[in-house]
Length: 147
Image 1 (cartoon, rainbow, N blue to C red):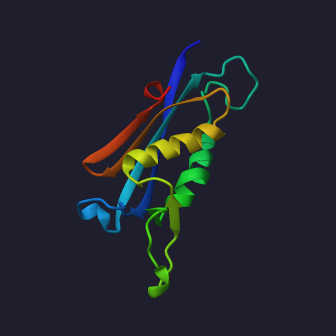
Image 2 (cartoon, one colour; image 1 turned 30 degrees about the vertical axis):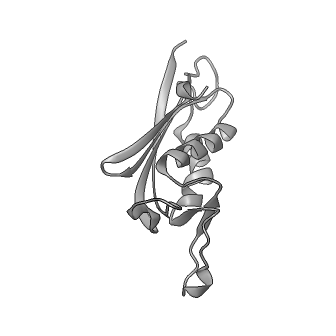
């Protein structure tokens, strides 16, 4: 039976700042992120299941990634938990997510991979993630490099 890779694409808007960075990314700024999630598995054949002929229904991947990442991070401000900002001085309160790491494209990919792997059906393997931060910049995570 053949192993097939399938990919679902996602888009979300997110702001971040890099604590202690020596460059403009130390300031709060945003990106239009594009996340590709690729899983691999065997095609279901010879079953009476409604997803016969599929590795997995794309809707299952969509629900997992939307619940864990897109709905949480879309239009959020992501900061290293060590960053000290008092938002009480502003007329707004951002949708704030603090993380125990520098919120770079690379670290976000590792975090997203860890989240997704916990929710995938047992017949699937997370193969790779692709996160585009700008039109010319992206990072990739591959399971084979992280065993």
